[in-house]
View 1 (cartoon, rainbow, N blue to C red):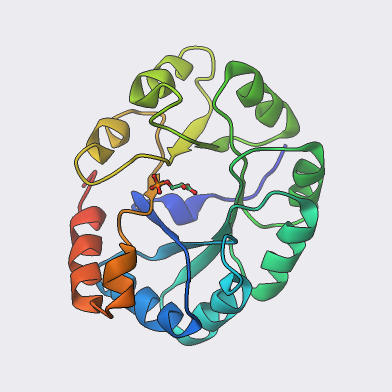
View 2 (spheres, rainbow, N blue to C red):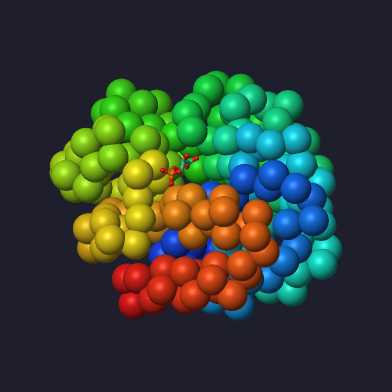
Length: 209
Ligand code: 3PG
């Protein structure tokens, strides 16, 4: 069983899923989100800048708790932790990822959307799971149903979540937080509209309050 703390998710209902398209966006984007009350920042490995962006944010943005997303194998896990990631999120799961995470003190959120996947993650020792893609995997109703057989597990749904529907997830007792890319619209980043992103973050950080 992993004894790692997931306290970073306390009082932090929303995790932005961040894709860094240009390195110069990393610091001002992180600062804009922090200014709006969003401290946990998931930088996905979907772009070539991700690892360097994680290091930059960690070193230069006060108050940021930077993590990594879209981690699909143990090599990526190691690279992200070396870069400074404080938490690791995967869209799915594998024995190699479980093993690697259990060797570290880094909070790991494996992905699971079926009862079988949830059981595998639980058996490996993980109690806080990503639920992705949420909207096409049964949404809030599916997570609510998991509360019966998996009363001791908590979920962080992402995929198709936005300001309008986040509340339906966050009202569930077994949802620890929600994630999504709605906080970081690509056009706003491209145009340097950091105030706009701070405003979105402010609204998001009030969710579940
Ligand atoms: C993720 O990686 O968690 C999802 O791609 C985020 O999904 P969204 O873009 O629908 O918010």
